[in-house]
Image (cartoon, rainbow, N blue to C red; front, top):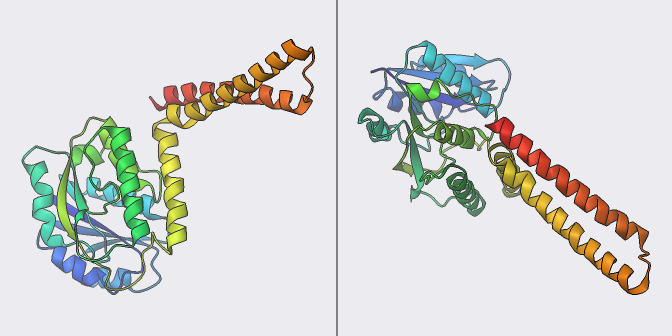
Length: 289
């Protein structure tokens, strides 16, 4: 059984060597996908013994992860371990992460950080993680405990069928697709440490993270639950239109005229837009399936 670790990296020269050396004890090969780093990440990774695949320009996290899985497939991986280059995950936990796959109890194993945090995660990030995880539970029906983790193990049959399209949504995208394909998902509690150097590529500040998190949640619902995304607002618009319309009909029955032409137009628009959104929800749901 061939184990390959993929490590996406962007400007991680201060931590990449330690991560590679610690990871190499538990896998057969390490692929570092250098996403256009402007420092010495690539050179240090090569000298540490990893195979380095360079993106000439920064392509984003999702495309970088996908390239790593594609390369692992070419190299005959049976299990792929994904781990970040910033040193926040402990490679010593790789054996327990892959054990459910070896025991044929899971196809995708997620390292759950929230049980064993070794530092005080920023409250906005913790809140975002819980929101994403709750959303993934609703969309998949699976027992997801950490939907944002960057430490995971995947069976060959899973990553051969997955294609990641989003950048910051790749963590959710992989989980939702795996669940909808019927793959078994397991959770393993892991330790999670504070970054020793550098800045997170996902969190430049609380407001930036909150805005990005909200956009990801909306996109995830739009892509995987279009009936709810388009249908619920459509029903609300129709109900509002009917309420306003009923009021106008009642007024006409009492006094013989309606008046308020702009309000009548608004009522018509609410109903028309609502009907269109429901049709859009039905079509999007059919296309998704």
